[in-house]
Length: 453
Image (cartoon, rainbow, N blue to C red; front, top):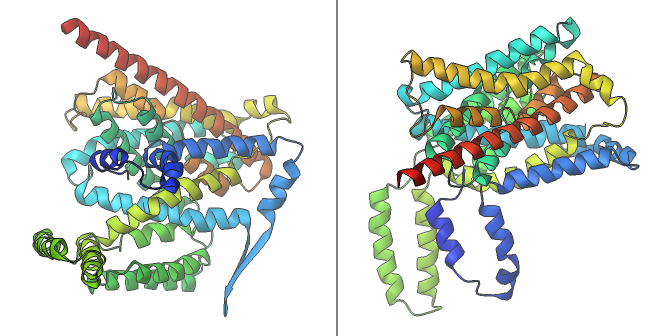
């Protein structure tokens, strides 16, 4: 979720009023851009690759493997830093994904069957074709658990590149890719829950489900304090972590229980705010009455906003600039100095790389084309098929989700390293090819418009 353009423009046009604002304003403007999270994620990836292939690579692994214990009375969790990032912080990432999915189903591109069918079918193609390519290449039973690695799309990198390409990219294409990535995340979460759960401890799972039900009841009762849902969330995360189901599923389930209704209707907010603003205008500067009115306005604005939107808006910067960069730093580090040629010829590497680089764009474009030609779906407005293929190729950037699934699929360090090399290579090539196609298609379209004029 990004800040609306009107708000961003208004904020950018307001001159800094203090020395500290003058210093930090360039960083604030950068953080507000949609591509900022992608740039930070890329920087973390480069740092991880550089560090893990440097003379200090032992310190990289030593830091990640160091044990950390968090305890509150009898509540004790001990894990290494790598596990805390993948099982703990990434639960917040999946929680945000769940909030975005719920929002899309309520008011976004997935809110009606007619609008949802096109990105849904496209995402289905982007799941089936890469999986078939992987299975057909990595045929050994030892490698089959990696079939889901090439089915994912990294929404941060993909949308970041679309933003980097500028305003010449049609709005319809951005909306389509966003909706597709959301559906893609739904598929990925379902795959993780179904295919990457080995043993289930039913008492812990029952406790986790009870926590989700408690969160839902709090929603029904009209509780709107995010702190209440945060407390329930910690309990659910701990229970699901001990159940055998991956802890990130807890984030998705909890997100669906967050209230979307507001405590104050828009008409009531406008009426009460106008009355308060009139009183504020008449109040003495720096008086108790002035401060009281300002605090009341803040409270009214909070009541007029839904908890789902408030939490999503507040969580987004932490996910973009802390959680995902840490995940990249902890998971993208792979030693490419030893037997790289052998790794590139490995069936797992070929299956993942071809699945992401060739299977993902082919599946998305082919299923989209068939859906339109058969009349099942309506294509995105003002988008050419060439632009569709360019965007589909960008969706071959698996990165975050692919690395995450790879960590679940392979416990063998050698296979995991091979998978990481394939993911990184295919993601880079997909990003380059997709950007080139979209850049050229936009330039061609501009030339056609100029010729018509």
